[in-house]
Image (cartoon, rainbow, N blue to C red; front, side, top):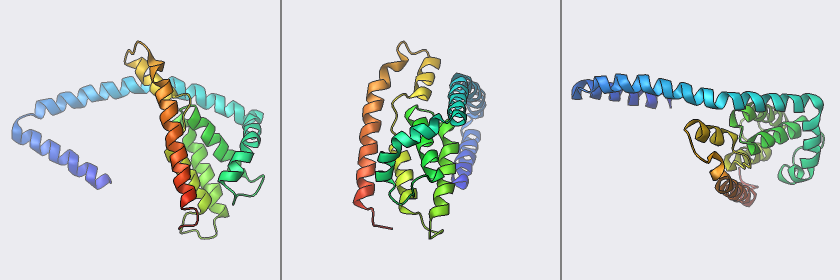
Length: 190
């Protein structure tokens, strides 16, 4: 993938020299750097806030309580995981973070969940059923509070940054259901 991006960038630079638009490329690089920094400063406070809340929830045992509440559902989705295994806590933390729209904050929980699931995996070269279901659950992307999107809309001056709330809830709920349905449809497939 890196090679493809390098080729795209090199072709763009060479074409800009040939077509005489190198100044446009330079201007775009400068303006996109500023835009990137604006986006970063718009999202960063939310990531810090919610990452801190998740850390407090972890240290206080709240995430363990949440994973206990989620266990009946998670047990149905991940029947191969033994009760009380740490991967359930990581999976529930990841799901909770994703539901809050904190993609970046949920990544550490997702990585820990996959590491933990790999320990349970008998065939280390192939995804286990639970690993596949976890990936599919993340791809479905259930989100109830799209924090990052609301932050971006607010950063760019939206008059109603939360206007997208209902469509996002509906589409992510439907995509998650479809993803889980397909996962169950092919549950025995490797």
